[in-house]
Amino acid sequence: MTVVRDPALAADARRERRFFLSLSLPALFIVGLAAILPILWIIRQSFLTTGGEYTVGNYQKVLSSGLTWSALVTTLELSLGTLAACILLGTPLALALASVRPRLANVLMAFVMLPLWTSILVRTYGWLVLLRRDGLINAALTGSGLTAEPLPLVYNFTGTLIGMVHYMLPLFLLPVYAAMRDIDPNLIRAAASMGATLRQVIRTVIMPLSAGGIFSGSIIVLIYAIGFFITPAVLGGGKVNPLSTRIERTLSTFQDWGSASVLGILLLVLMALIGVMLLAARRLVAQNTVEASHA
Amino acid sequence: MKSLAITIESVHKAYGSYVALDDVSLDIQAGEFLTLLGPSGSGKTTLLMALAGFVRPDSGKLFLGDRDITRLPPNKRDIGIVFQNYALFPHMNVLANVAYPLVLRKVPRAEARQRALDTLARVKLDGLAERNIAALSGGQRQRVALARAIVFEPRVMLMDEPLSALDKNLRETMQYEIRRLHDHLRITTIYVTHDQREALIMSDRIAVMNSGRIQQIDTPQRIYDRPSTRFVAEFMGEANIVAPGSARRIDGAEASHETLMIRAESFHLDAKLVGGDGVALEGILRTKAFRGENWLLTLALDGGQEVLVCIPAALAGGCAELAAGQRMTAYAPAAKVHAIPGATA
Image 1 (cartoon, rainbow over the protein chains, first blue to last red):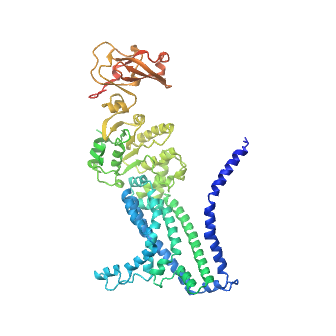
Image 2: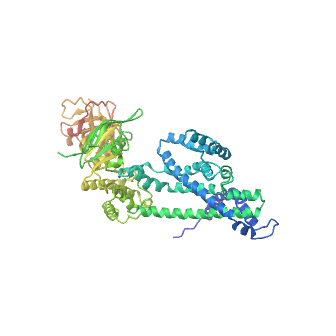
Image 3: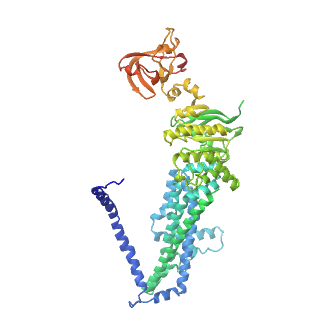
C-alpha cells in the first residue's frame, strides 16, 4: 500500500528541520573563524621562510633538533604523569563524593571547585610560595626535623607536575563524579546481596559503569595538559620545557614563525594521535568488560 | 513443628521524627511465602531492607534460623533479593548477570555457566543468555532478576514489589509463576506489595502493615474474612463498616451491638438466600453501576451511612430494574458478618 504524501506537510517538516539546523550556524561560524582558519594559516606558515618563500626547511630544522624531541618527551611525560595522578587521586575522591550524603557531597564539591574560580596565575605563584626552598612546606619539613635539607620541590619536573595536577583534578573529577552519581544505588545493593564485598562491588560494578566518565575526564586532562604553558613556565624554572614553552621561546627569542608553526603542528598531531589511541583503548575496554562478564 | 527461617524481634526504626518501624515482631516458617502488605509509607519496604541489611534498625534483633544477623553485613547474609526496578547490571549480558553471584562464590566457570543456563531455563528464558539487558522487555528483565536471585540457592528470598512495573496481564501471569517457582524450590520468601489481590493470590500468610506496625498477620482467607482492625478490613477490598444498630436480624432476634464488617460481595437482594440469623440493611438506593461481572449498588442507610453492595451479574435478576431513590433491603448471611473488636464506624 502506498500513501500519497501531502506536499504541504512535507514542506513543513523540511522547514522545521532547516530551522533547527540554522541554529548551529553562529557556532559553526565562530569555530570556523577561531579554529579552522588559524590552523590553516599555521600550516601555510610552516612552509614559508622568513622571506616568504615556500620551503620544507622549517620541518628539517625542527625535526632534526634534539630540543624538539626532548620537548616532545617532556610534553608526554607531563601529560601522562598528570593523567595518572588525576586517575589515582580523582577516582577514589569521586567515589567518596558519590557515596556520602548529598548535602555533604555538595559542600565537599564546593571545595574541589574552589581552585577553578581562582586565576591560574595566582594559583601557580601560590604553589611557588608553598614549594620553594624557603617555602612553607620545606620550612615545615626541616623545622620538624623530618628532612635535614630542603627538598627540591619546585623549578623542576615535580613542581610542574604538582601544579598541573592541582589545576586538572577538578576538571577530571566532574565527569567521573557525574558518572558515579548516576549509578543506581540498587545495583550496588544487588551486588552486595549476592555476596560481593565492597572491593568486589567497586571492581565489578562501579568501575565498569563509571568507565565512560573516567574516559571523558582523561580526554579533558590530556587536551589541557598537552598545551599547558603557564605552569611549566613558572614552576619549571626554565628546566621543564614541553612543546608549549618551546613554541613561546621560538617566537619571543627568535621570531621564527616558521619553526613555531611546525612545533604547533607537532602538538596538533600529538593530540590527534592520543585521541585515536584513547578511542581504541575505550573500544578495547568495552570489549573486555563484556568478555570478562561472561562467566 | 516446622523450623523458623526468620525471626524479627521488636525492631524499631525512625528517620528523625518519622517512625518507619514501630516495635515490629514477626516469625516466618522455613519454606513459607509471606507477604508484607500495606500502603506506601507503611514500613513494609523498610522492614525488607532491614532484613537485607541495607537499613540498620535503631533497636531490635533479626535472626536467620538461629543465627543473629542484626549486625551482619548484607554480603554475608545469603539472601536473594529481587528489586522493584530489577537492578540488573547494564554492563553485563543476561548470562553474566545470572552467573554473577556464582562467580563471586568462586564456582568454576563451566559449572557457573551451566547453573546459570539451567536457572534461565527454569524462568523460561532459554535462548536469551547472550542478550544485552537493554534489549529485554520488562517481563524478561523481571525473569532475569528472579533467576539471579535464586541461582545461588539462598535460604531466603526477598522481593520488593517486583511486579509493579509490569502491565496487568503480565503481572497476573508472573504472580502464578513466582508462586509455582516458590512451591518447587521452597525458598522462604518475603514478598512486599501494596496490591491486596496480589497478596491474596500468592501468599501462605499476609502481614498487613500500617504506619510502621503489623496490624494483622494471618492466612489470606482469614485476613479477608476476619480482619482484626478497621484498617485491615478497608484495605482488603470493598468493606462496609456498619455502625452498631444499623443492621437488624432477619429473624427479629436482638441485633449485635458491635461494629460490623460486611464485604460488598457478601450481600444478596433475596432474603431467602440468607438464613434467619443473617442481617438486613435497609436504605435508599443512591447509585447503581454495571461492572460486567457484577452490579455495584450504593445504599444510603437510614442513619445516613452509605454501604456498597456488590451483586454478581448471574444472580442480579432484578438489578437492571432498580431505580435510584427507591427503598430497598440488602441481606448478608451470618457467616459473612464479622464484628470488629474495638472499632467504631
